[in-house]
Structures are given as structure tokens and as C-alpha cells.
Length: 440
Ligand code: KE4
Image (cartoon, rainbow, N blue to C red):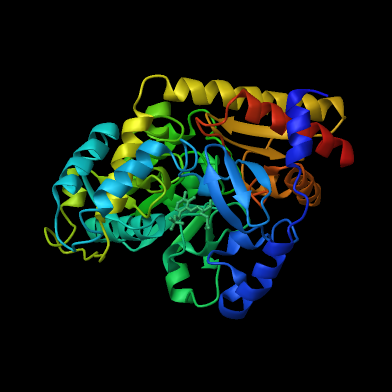
């Protein structure tokens, strides 16, 4: 038996009784037993796994089972769990105090490092989550253009603020409908949705709302439909359409920022937005969000300008210390080449194994973010993603979980490879996938 298989057999999660018990207890005090809905396994069935610790590419649950982790806390952990240098940076910052609610030198340094990494940002404001970043960016865009309507992509996700919790329409331009209870029809009415990768629909939307659209916000590589890259020329078309209409183009790079390239998707595709939102990786595993962009737009932000936005823990010293160290690690030579090599080996290996079993698996990958859809057709937008066999995905998810591999518990999410995913981790994953595909 190959060493990797033997290790996998040894590591096979034997039981998850403690997770199950904790979930029952959690549900008494926490809505749905989780502090964020996607963690509840509603997309794949079964009970969530409760984790005790992580190290490198591995997570360890409360029952002592080991997993190769491809969630990476939904993207932030591009250098793996508990990276020594990040832990050290946090410990050093913590020893000097955890929060001041006042400006610090490291925030000044971090702002400059972020703007140098993402040159389309001439100024940047730190917040504590991706949700805050996108919510603020849209408010600034509305203040700057004095227009009310915004456009998002059908199936795009930008955090849980009212303006953005709007369900997608039929795939062509539609007036947004509330995507959550509690979001008013009035709020949703100012949010238009349009299918990803449909340039004609975007042009039609602008023609039908001439002079009324404040901003278009997109994930430059969709990660919340699952991974769905932009069609050739699509981002360039968005840039041209928004510039011509005087609308602000916002790239929500909360997931793609420092993930697909050091400068994010905008560096990879060579398209500069007017504003960028960041999160996840820039916090090094601690709560950091950021929004930034052209100086004339960011000059609207209080106290410099009339658009109000604030946060007690914005620029928190520990989170900024972790984020700065993360950027330093990401900036080291070879980081993205290493991620490309290991991610390609993994996804190509999965494709070959699925093909050997005669399974229809369509994989979309950009750098170290990827999604496998059980579909024999290309997945280019939310409508085509929804046509994939999500029931089969659920079976695959659980077969991989039982094989010691932790994937995102939803078809409509991206998986992430870190620099800690070495050949042993990839081999273990492919061994588990061979068994999982056989069981489908
Ligand atoms: P947070 O508020 O969760 O930090 O960021 C919101 C957000 C904004 N923009 C993009 C492109 C995002 O992907 C996210 C958050 N992503 C989800 C999962 N893809 C986080 C997981 C969760 O909701 O628990």
C-alpha cells in the first residue's frame, strides 16, 4: 500500500461523536449552531465538524481526526494554519496591547504596503470584515456619483449588508428582489442584478438605467458561484461600460486579493477598477477588511469628506500585524509559482481520476482557487452552475470528509490550496478522491 494511502487509512476519521454533541449544545444558544450559515453543512447535509486546531495544510477536529484542509477559513490561510511567523507577529503585537482606538504607526505602514501592492488604490481605509468593506465602498460610490442604483452579478456574494443581500433575477437584468428577510423592497429596488459573463446584458442594463447607476460591484473571478473565471474580454468590457457611463467599477477582491496574484485579479487580468475591496488574506487569519481606490473617490470618506464610515476595531494592532506579515510572506519570491504548481497537480489529478471513473466533472481553476462541478457542460455563470449535480457533490463531499479531506461544504464555494499543501497532502487527497469517485 502506498505510503500516502497507508497514512490516509490511519488518519481516516474514525468518529465525530464530540462534534455531534457540541453541535447539539451549540444549537441551544447560537442560531443554527453556527456563527455563519455556510458552516452548518446545509449545502451538503449532515452535521458540521467542530475543529480544535490547525497546522499547515491540516485541521484536527475535536475527536482527534486529521483532515487535509481546502477551506483555509474560506480563503485567508494561503500560507496554511498557525504559520510560525504570523503567530510570532501577533504575539509581539499583543504584548504591547490589543487595541487603542487611536492611530498607530503600523496602520500607516500597512496602508502604504496595500496601495503599493494594488496600485489602483491611491488611498485605503481599513475595516474589520469584507462585509464592511463592500458596504462602505458602495456608500462611497453613491456619495461620489450622487446616484442610487448599483449593479451586482447574479450569484455574486459580497457579504451580508442589506444592499447586497439581493437575490439574482432570471439571469438577465432584473430589479433586485430581497435575498433575505428583513431587507426592504425599497433597498432591494436600488440593486440590479445581471448574469456573470454576459456583456450584452450589462450594456442593456446601463441603457435602461441611463445616468442612474452609481456602481457595478463584481468579484473579478467569481468565487461564490463556485470558481467561475471572467470570459475573455469581459472585465475589459465592464471597464469600458462603467467608464463611459460615469459609474464606479468596484472589484470585490476579498477572496481574489493576494490569492490569484500578489496584486489580485486586477494584476492577473490587467484591468484597473476605480475601487477595490479586500479581506480574508490581508488579515492573515484575523479580522481585517479594506476598501480603497482613486484619490478623488476616497476623498469622499469622513472625516475628509461627507460619506460616513467608522469602526471601533478598524486597523486593530493585532490584525494589522498579522496582515502585514501575511503580505510579506505572499511577497516572497516563488510563492505564486509554488501555488500554481501544486494547484495544477491537484486539479489535473482530480480530473484524470474522475474521467477514469466515467464521471462528468467540470473543474474551474484560477491559481490556487478552484471548484469541481459534477456537470458535463462548461460552468460560466450562476445558471450553469445550478445545473450541476449538487446531490452528487454532497455525496462526494462526505466521502472525502470520511477520507480525511475537508472541502467547502457547498457546491457554490471555492476550494483553496495553500503553500503548506505539499506533495504528501496532494497525494493523500488524490488517494481519497479515487475512493470517493468509486463510491459515487
Ligand atoms: P466577510 O464579511 O465574510 O469577511 O466577507 C464577505 C465577503 C465579501 N466578498 C467576497 C468575495 C466574499 O467571498 C466574502 C465572504 N465569503 C464567504 C464564503 N465565500 C465567507 C464565508 C462565510 O460567509 O462564512
